[in-house]
Image 1 (tube, rainbow, N blue to C red):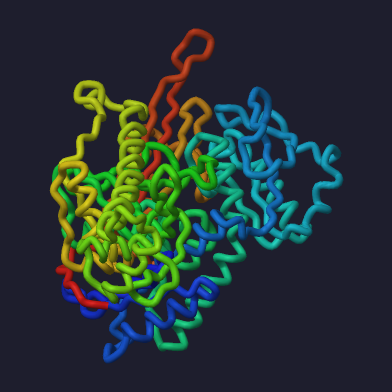
Image 2 (image 1 turned 180 degrees about the horizontal axis):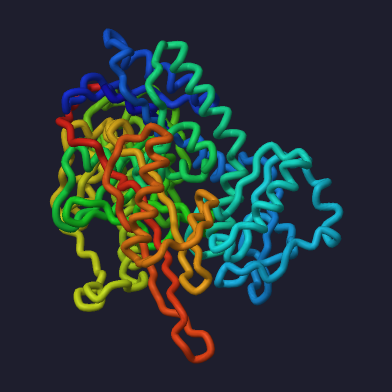
Length: 552
């Protein structure tokens, strides 16, 4: 059996999956003041009458990292950067970095070693205990990062994140921000992970525990601790995987996961979710975190409602639950209930909620309709922005040039508790058909349970210099004879499979994420080749399942 747990802004869901079916599913309120308590409540209930020794794997999708970053509940981080000449990085990072001498050129040659005499006070900054180190072009030679990391470690830092180990791709700013955010949430994430691990042991669950990533793959708990920034935006990723497992939409489609706090929007084409062509942004800063082309908007069933002279404003604050289920303030769910788009709770209480906004010439149905229209307008506007972003992204292939990259949606797919009402209203506005798959209310937990393990790495080879480098491993080796792009792919694939075996991950397909190949010229003569390659164990779902609806 596979166990999936999804911690959302309003509900914590848990599902057990076996033999291609959902065996048990539970939805419990998220305990924001103590997230683990809500997880354990859902876990204990879903495990009733089921043998824990049959659980093969546990996957957790949690908002713990996302919330820590968006709410500013992070630890202070000592950020050290080695920028070298020719790059102004002012205001590129969340904090002002400490600039360290020493730099690597674009070929991977160390042009300047760290001048320790210039940084005599550097090792006295260990009061922060966590640090992030990043150097321009360090993915082509991380030696300076390693040396600085060793010095900081020896001076008392508990944990140090290196930019070259978090991403093997070029883009110094994205790599640096990834290292910074990983350090900022490390202690919070570490505490959460070990609490979960210990709680599972107490329940005699000895199955491996994985954490969902933003790109839809999973990492073993101990591996995730080395790159906690990858655990951001796992809620949206879980909903995408859940939809894929319950029945991926064909053609060009838009999925909407309507929760209590947010609505997560993703794009699909021919049964597959579209990935962002650049890394995810955290607090407005670009990172190297690979993610789906998604957007979260602060509109959900528990969203706060305000009325101004210009009309209604829905969200982004959450005040739920709805008055229909005992809440104290009107919410979007109360409007959906009054309009007859969803059916739960006390309908009279929902109408009373609408009465608070009603003006003499209006009916409660008018108020509910106006509130829903405001929410739909905000979501439609966000979709329009996403469509524009997709259309202006860089074109990479001949096929893109010929056919273009425009995205014309043909279908809306809704999951989450509020989907039947809100997505239906959006479909009517946009003139698109709507699908709500069976099992939609726990789609995120289903996606978490069925996510495939993944692992990514990069390789860079310079035939003139005669070496290849896998930054994530620190491996720098001489090139074998007859080296080629095909051989580079084989070397990197073999390393990925070796790591997968070391971490006891199941064998699976390896895919190429990106590759570059170009000739080098020295003194007017062709002198060699530079190959840059990035591959990963392909993320996705282990299998499809048959969903079922249960009244919660």
